Amino acid sequence: MNTPPDISDPNAWILYADADLLVVNKPAGLLSIPDGYHPGLPHLAQALSPAVGKLWIVHRLDKETSGVMLLARSAEAHRQLNQSFRERALRKLYHCLAAPNPQWQSQDLDLPLRVNADRAHRTRVDLKRGKPARTLVNVLQRGESFALLECALFSGYTHQIRAHLYAAGLGILGDALYHPKALNTEDARLQAERMMLHAYEIGFKHPSSGLELSFRAPYPQDFEKKLSSL
Image 1: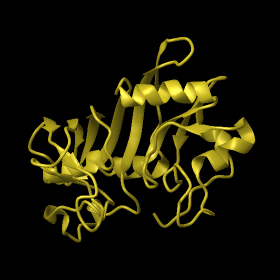
Image 2 (image 1 turned 30 degrees about the vertical axis):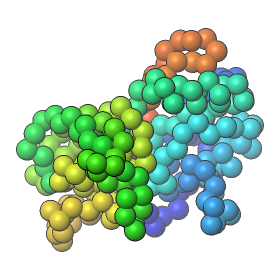
Image 3 (image 1 turned 45 degrees about the horizontal axis):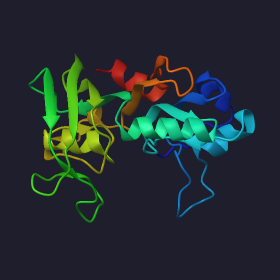
């Protein structure tokens, strides 16, 4: 993504806040955690902490991925939410714009993955050495050249959605790392300035009350604009 994220008003990202946790709609282009090689680059907690106080990161989104993220506001909430992630007790839904248009309506991609499987540090399907991983994909809208997909994660490996879609012959618009041969085209409809992947919904049990909560993050403008051309 060439355009830096607007971090002038981080309060505008907040979807929910209480004494234990914060739910935000992370803008594309903003790091989830500090960059080890470039520590001066802006990241999520750095942008939010002046307004809301100390934060603990519970999970991550890739820099180019927009959407809903859950952060803890106490060490105990952080511990409990981390446990929920380890036990895969959270529900996570992602929306993406991908091509080519799949011939199927729904696909259960139950394929083992190996992280850092090549020199480009890509995650790959590996039937022998991979770890169990599952992504359930549904087509929400279809266009002539690409489709809006909903991806439900039942595991949480790095680049899981991108790797599973690549194995199915699909690529997310704007993703140069997982780029199937079918997308080697000059078709302007398949071009995007950043990866069109959005963390749409998260559901979890509140660390103090035990209530089941669910939050959805609205699409950012660039995603909406690309979707409108579907």
